[in-house]
Image 1 (cartoon, helix red, strand yellow):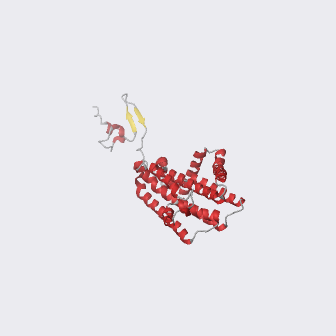
Image 2 (tube, rainbow, N blue to C red):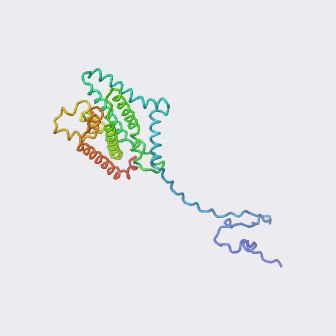
Image 3 (cartoon, rainbow, N blue to C red):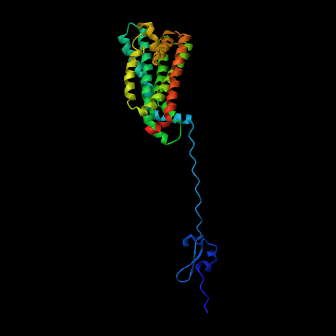
Length: 309
């Protein structure tokens, strides 16, 4: 008498102990009987190993990012060629020669006026260019914030690098010209001039930090600033000496950041006179207030900057 056929799970030991609710194809492995009665071995498939969560890539070092962004801006502006680099050095020099030639002809009777005018024009040009670029820096380069993790203020600070390079070259040119003209500034004068440039840069950075985040929400801000800067050109003592105005107005003119820097730079470079301690304290106060206000505004609005990019 033929023995009763067992179920497939009982026919092979691999089927014993298997979860009754599991699908037939979910067995770990063994042999499977085909229609012809032959036993066919199938490979054992291991359960997929869990993939660990990818850790976020740490941000790069801020100094390395600053150098990379400065170098990139320089190459973009001057196309990364040797001629472009030479032009970056020659542009302030050629502009100085052109202005000196024109003003020497127009203002031949006043030797100091033309030098004072050239110094003021270059210092103003730095302020106008740097603040204009800094205002739109986050809007122009905000896409980089989605590519890597780094502080957003780096985009603002590095945006003024080209203007800083131009100002640095001009400073060397004007000091060399004064030396060749027989009126070299003193070491103390050079030291204070460098101090003024540093404070000037800090004021520009503070302004750029504030306006860069505000521009993301108020897109007309660049148009407003263009009008303000045009009016500010005549507020600062660039084309006129400060002494022609009543003394009671001097304080209000000195609140405008370019005014004390232009006036003090003229004094130490051309006139050979050091400003008073009170004047230096005033400039330090204007610098501190401008930078602190820019940092506070930036820290308040920067966390939501991505919503407006």
